Length: 328
Image (cartoon, rainbow, N blue to C red; front, side, top):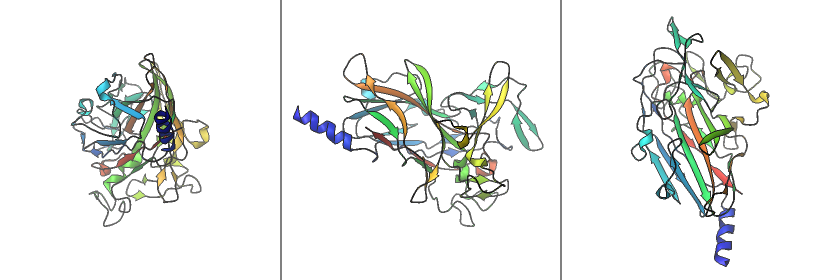
């Protein structure tokens, strides 16, 4: 009894420090000759590597969307997730999609004068998880009930954050003095509640790198949210299409929308763009077997076709994802 109590207390104290770190190196191959969206089938993505560190008393399992983890899937301590170990990632091809964080579409395109834009008069296909965008179910369980949140240590970063622009830019684009890694500015991340094999509420819709703006000929960094009319908060807004059987309507969400789940990164004391506030994503509840408190959430990451950094000049960009969880 004393050992159990001590273990629970130890686990409770281990918050906000490397509970989970997801590191994703994303390589985007040829996308298209046009801006925003692409209809090319030759785009590829590889080198995806996810590392998770877990504290005492917590177990996690990562599985394909909708799959049920086995007892062998749960791990403690650390886990490495990559295409060579998880078969559901083998066919992943990152291609531009439009999404509200829960539903993903690949629009039909109109191509004109070297550009492409969605054709709202044609039928659109739903994007396929782990073919067009990254998606996985994260199961968390413990013998103690916890509330699990993402902390402000969570961030998307490039391999060389100080070499994104200039003559010596790392992974330099052939189109100018800027790094292809600026593709990270077009990324989005969402967390969706998941119960009884059904998607529930959106817990988080996040623009991790709103500070990066591709202006058509070059890259601007540290783009402000307000105060400069030339930007007008452009990179801090999320645009997507709401699709029904009869219509396709463009929507915009920003920090002024008053939507709790929507987040854009803020600068921390180290000058890094991070999740601006602790964000609850799961509450562990008792399962039928009464052995563990368990919860599942669905995590999605995609390259958004409506973002200015989704450009041919930035293909083959690389970036990392760090997700830091805390418990109480």
